Length: 242
Image 1 (tube, rainbow, N blue to C red):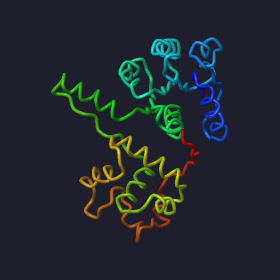
Image 2 (cartoon, helix red, strand yellow; image 1 turned 90 degrees about the horizontal axis):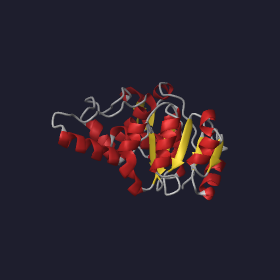
Image 3 (cartoon, rainbow, N blue to C red; image 1 turned 60 degrees about the horizontal axis):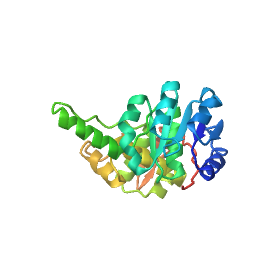
Image 4 (cartoon, helix red, strand yellow; image 1 turned 120 degrees about the vertical axis):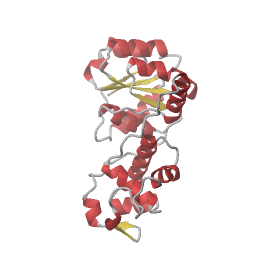
């Protein structure tokens, strides 16, 4: 991946974090989109993260999208920059994070986009969908993205009233990895809290109150080995706050 941002201190901090990351490898970091293109950096990576600001403005982002149409692009933007999200999506941008988010959120976005997924903020998307519905009364809102087995297991534990620490113990995950899964669950369900995610799924639960067939694998707030073996391998995360 390549980092493009006018803040050298930020680039140095992210480079330090990425040096310890298991799946992301930093190819280079520069201050402007023009420098990245001049040095041919996008040709040697799958993902580019661009800090959208006065130095790397929307015109620079448009140039990057135009010259590298197959590149996975993640935009780091201030809150007022989200006005550019609709047009950026049309250009092919697949990831968008706020500058107010922590470095972990940026890493999540980079991993998702590198894997071919989208990583987009829920509230601006909801506003876009609402505007579309106003123009097209016959349109319907998109459904929530399906959860992976491990995400469903974490949600089952939340629905059972387990704390995030207890979930980590039960599923053999670090506390930070549990937080990562919870963030992904909220993003996929388009909600902003774990309680809202649980409330949303309760209407679709089986009579036993479990969503993923884990009733027989959970007793007294703990998941048995059988339920644990059915889950995916836990991934490691680096906890760094921006």
